[in-house]
Image (cartoon, rainbow, N blue to C red; front, side, top):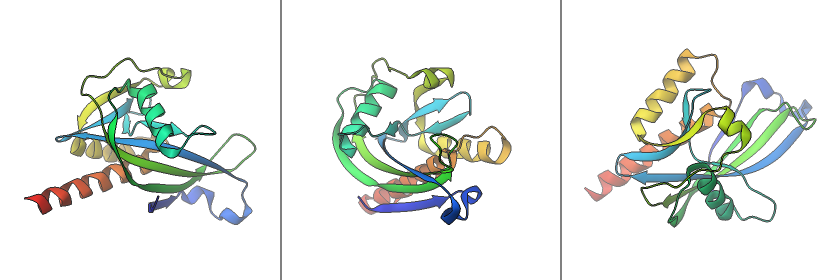
Length: 179
């Protein structure tokens, strides 16, 4: 899958002197009209794409489907198409590493509008995560305001906001092309 964007947190530079751990993740992009299915996290007051780490033995697509089902209770997952891969380097404070090198493989898909019951991990429940249908432009503006005005912003917020902006840009150019 093609890398569509890269982000390096300035706190990890220079990379040459750091211990780096690599993580592969998969994320779902579910659009219905002007709305997108996102995870709202109360602890950080932000929106993010459903997704997470790819388990050993899973393909990128299988990881996306599993994460989407676990986090949102999504049913009828279909019409899966690749969007692109987001590459990032950010601080990491576990596993004896200083830096996480994450590749987030993102896929468009469709789901049934009515969601089932999510199966959250402990930290997801603790952080107050919940799936929501929200207007894409609202989510972008909200995340930007959180980044500008909050000291509690999560580390993934830059990635998530950049991805949401790219999704909106692609949606807008597709709509203009078909008009």
